[in-house]
Image (tube, rainbow, N blue to C red; front, side, top):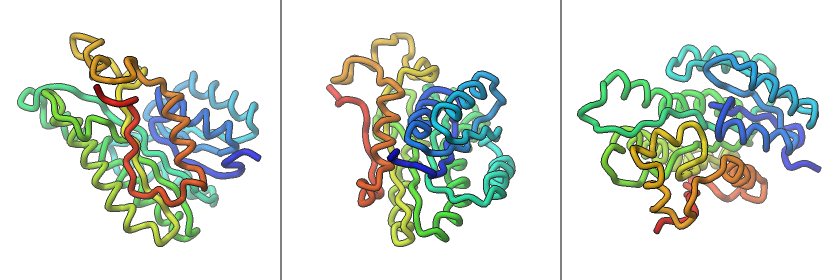
Length: 248
């Protein structure tokens, strides 16, 4: 039997990169998915249709502006109206950034924090109402190794992910008695479209500091997410799993 047969998940930032890889692995394990992303994508719709056919699950696309609380609530109302359990929430969507604080516009900082921190908070608060009633649920927030690293240009992005880590750890203590676990993963440089944001002028520079010696593939991280969601991991709560192959 597949690990998540008949379960239902919400994945944000689902149309590309890590989010897309997570959707694929969840579907392969029998999990239905509400896939949240910002702009309608015919390519993702074709991808979702193929998964539905191959794995006998539903993949429902919902366009949401995660910088807008009202848009998040509208998207959740669509999900809630289906009267299904919400077993899994993956807060994956994020805005990458590397740049000097004094050169970055306040408006951009607000938008980055809205997507990287406040969107996961808002969506988690909504989903917890469902999970608390059913006395079960698993939430994974996608942070970053940048949450604990100190280097020039990381003050904005790194601090947003550090706040997400602190939110994860404290919330985990609050929800465990209701049968809900909250964990975070902190990946290093992933081989996705966003990686160029962190590479600067020398794409090899970030790789030199990893024992792995290369970028991480999205599927490799998705596989770890699937393992964290397993019932065998039910005592893992408030954890931050670093995924970078080790520093050097």
